[in-house]
Amino acid sequence: MAESINAAIIERLEKVVSTLQENSMKMGQLLAVHNEKLDKQDRIDAVLFEKVDSVHREVNRRSDEIKKGCERDIRKVDDRLRVMEKKMWTIFGALSVLSFLVSPVGQKILSPVFEPSQRQLTIPQNNPMIYPSDVS
Image 1 (cartoon, rainbow, N blue to C red):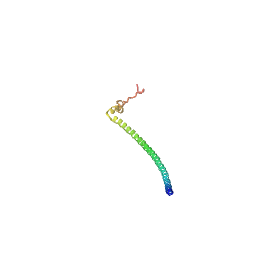
Image 2 (spheres, one colour; image 1 turned 90 degrees about the horizontal axis):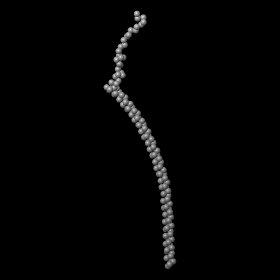
Image 3 (cartoon, rainbow, N blue to C red; image 1 turned 90 degrees about the vertical axis):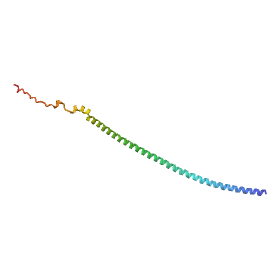
């Protein structure tokens, strides 16, 4: 009887060992599939990160182009405003001078300059020239 119990225990142990071997093989296969999926995901991640970096570089390049374009446009507008400002101040100065010249104060200052003096208005007299032959 002891031998039949030992044989039953051995037979049972052999079944357990066989089941453990099968489970170990299945676990190895699962781990291999899992590792393959992880490797594949790592490759996909590398491609995605490269694409993200590429998009980031492109966005930076485009934003630099936009920034330079905006700065150029701002300079052009600033230059045009300066030209307009110069013209405006020139016109303002000319109008100021004209308004002063037309004003009563300006007329008093300018009237002696533009009105001929009394001396210039007198008609010169013809003084007869006396020649030595006419003298007697």
